Amino acid sequence: QKEVEQDPGPLSVPEGAIVSLNCTYSNSAFQYFMWYRQYSRKGPELLMYTYSSGNKEDGRFTAQVDKSSKYISLFIRDSQPSDSATYLCAMSVEFVTSGSRLTFGEGTQLTVNP
Amino acid sequence: ETGVTQTPRHLVMGMTNKKSLKCEQHLGHNAMYWYKQSAKKPLELMFVYSLEERVENNSVPSRFSPECPNSSHLFLHLHTLQPEDSALYLCASSQEDRRGGLFFGSGTQLSVL
Image (cartoon, rainbow over all chains, first blue to last red; front, side, top):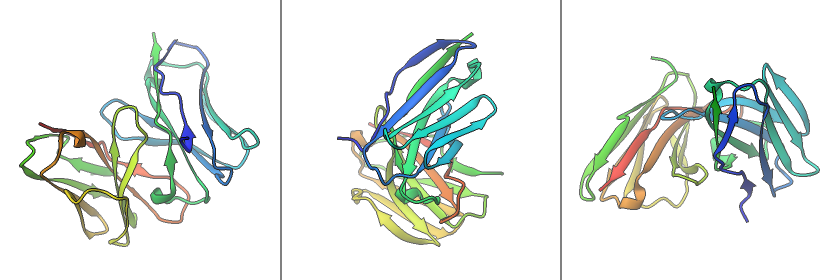
């Protein structure tokens, strides 16, 4: 069983839709959760990070963590064609940055159609 | 230049060639990484350098050889690669033990013929 599961998609939605991207995980010790966005022919860029359970909002983006269900989500409101990218979840046990201790999902490819 | 820059952006090589990938970070970070990204697979951590010392080598074949001459530069030397090594190779940097995430370069798309 993979430590982090993420549906690779592809996911295609019309402009203006609410998008829900999700990851499940098996390691209950994870407590630092991140979402990266990767445009075509670019490297991933950090979009949001959250600690433990709860919600975090940044503009049109909301990150949600449910540790009891081992489930994290990224919601995109009023989606735009510029949101078309691959979204990767990542998580670690410690609440610090250390690339060697991050576990990534395989990414979900999202296309927002005008 | 800002952020993390990688060269070349694309590389095609034969199985007997020797080539090198270069990465430079302009963020003042103290850790640098090489990741491999293949289709439908999670990012695979290959090497970690912290304060210019290699601290992790995730069972990567010896045909991949990293070099970190200083905290701003990272190389990946390639020789006698296999077709299954074709992938996007990403360099990243971070400030270890601080919040803020990894900062990635745009990657080198490698094709091994």
